[in-house]
Image 1 (tube, rainbow, N blue to C red):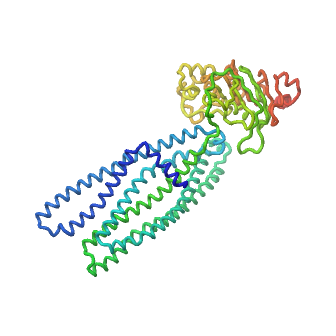
Image 2 (cartoon, one colour; image 1 turned 180 degrees about the vertical axis):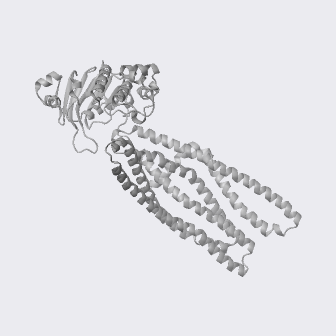
Image 3 (cartoon, helix red, strand yellow; image 1 turned 60 degrees about the vertical axis):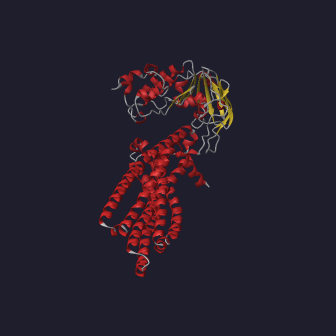
Length: 580
């Protein structure tokens, strides 16, 4: 039932292109009919026309020539339509499916991406979809062509000589059983190929993304060895699929020869007995080619079907994976907020995690306040902040903004109110201007420049060869760490949200860059609710309240002076950093 349902689902993608689809099938049928007509013409010429008077031969020959030229023109148009318009239909279906899966991937939560490899997802969006649409274009027309040619040839063969026809048909049941068994084996082999290709793509993407780390450790040989393991697995899977395909193609391909041998031997006997004449035998042999040629097409189609169908199974697998973070049915638009944030008895652990990350956390952050989160690695600081924009949902308790539970408002309206500056800055390939504009795509160029000035980025941008139109390379590799961070801050300035989260935004910078970026962050934080996750405690001394988070929850809270006077966890953390 799963295969049947998948095929029904695949067919629905033709719905937008019904006219082109049916015309494609019509022209495939006409093209097949042309092939069936020509041997009949040959039979008429050899059995009847050659025995007529010269004048009749020439007059009928002229009619036959005109008909044949018309058939050639018709066949030419049919093949042009199938190859051009039909392929465009396939490309449009591929476009639709790629748009659908890309849009679906945008909805998936962090949990999904934590368990996926980018290279594997890329394989599903590119290679798999290409094979699916090749099947969807060529599949129906191949079935029509082969059905008409095979059935038409069989009918004509039976009308010529039933005994010769039986000699040709007797092999078919054995072929069908053989094809059925081998198809099942090839489906499994081709699906395994898809998995191996996805693994190889994932490994390549991982290696190329981390090429600077690879080279810094001089580990190119280790990466080559890791790749060879995956590549050998891929080769092994390919060998298995080609082994099965080789048996299938050899068996089916040999079918043509077997049929011809059967017909020739039977024909010799029938001619000797006077049960068939030479003209009918020649016509029959012509139709044997018409009968067996579609079998070869079906051989290629079988491989195409296995490739396309296994690709569609993987496509459906992604499309049927439901996002775990979605708008509730009665979600409302979050109005402009003041920025009051409340964590009420919040507990959380990751999907595959064994231990609790947050346990019964209660915390209130008033609008416009500047709070800092500190604690040892793994205490849940980033996780706690990730619950505010609903990158994850709490297992217990609730998070609210201005009294609205974040699960009761739309994700878009919630996240539009929050700006995040992270330690690991992600800049898109393109120009500086395009990366800042990402914060608010409808902003004017003047607003982009103003945001850059507020982020202390305008001066260094203007010193670059093309200013704001400077291409920064993949992930901003042409910029320094401090420059990238200031671009990300400018992006948030442009967004202008009432709530800010700084996730160790300066911890990876040198002292000079940290000072510039810190100034930008403090400018950005004015009159906004700000939560700072800090590793360098020197950067948060001016915070209104510092929250010390441990695995048991909120252990301490207060100003820098209050916590130092208390002599607890915070003082120990501070002394460890500044004891020298």
